[in-house]
Figure 1 (tube, helix red, strand yellow):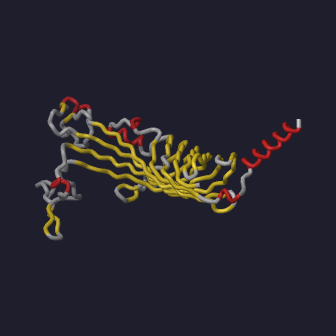
Figure 2 (cartoon, rainbow, N blue to C red; figure 1 turned 90 degrees about the horizontal axis):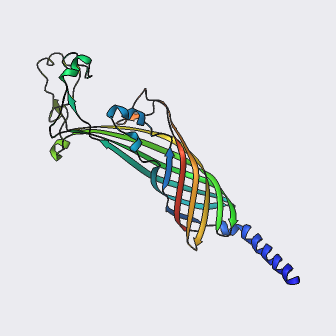
Length: 288
């Protein structure tokens, strides 16, 4: 009976030691590769890509951000850290091109009277359309640690920082050459003067400069915003200097109206856009 009581006391004492290891064990930190998977409620700007005939459901989902993460214990059970990463996903299409006579009204839209003039383009320079969505994130983290076992911890915290969304849309016909890439789209430069060739009708009534024929056209739409991501994480130190950390959270960011930019210039009537969704992060780290 005494042996059983002694064994129970030792077992309870050992468990108490596992759940209440001393504060100095919290000292230290770690750094490692940390991919983030975000199941975005919607790709920002995706609804407008219907105008290009692109299938937005082919964007990677969950969206993956490849990044690095670090953390360090500051005092007691409080931990500070940081995260930085970026990811991208691309979709493309080669649509069937139909050519029609727009001479009726010149509005560049197929009207009923112009449908009979349409025929399919069968040349070698078919148009291709490509959209690339990118997400960059840089944030600081703060969290509170709750020990479970000697090498197992549960923590709750949040990432707070800046995010940047970019949507690049390229329309291309044929193949670009190195010389054409650096050609002036509006005319000929002689010194610091641009010479723009106008048609006979435009010569005396020119109101704006129209670009010359170019093999590709790129729109770069982007926005920066404050990003907030609360999360719950579990950390397992399975070797002396190597461990695994898994986090589950919810990403929340908002791009306010008028904050979208086209090629670096604000789009004044751009809508408010949400960048939100469930996030899952894994980290294989070196440290304590």
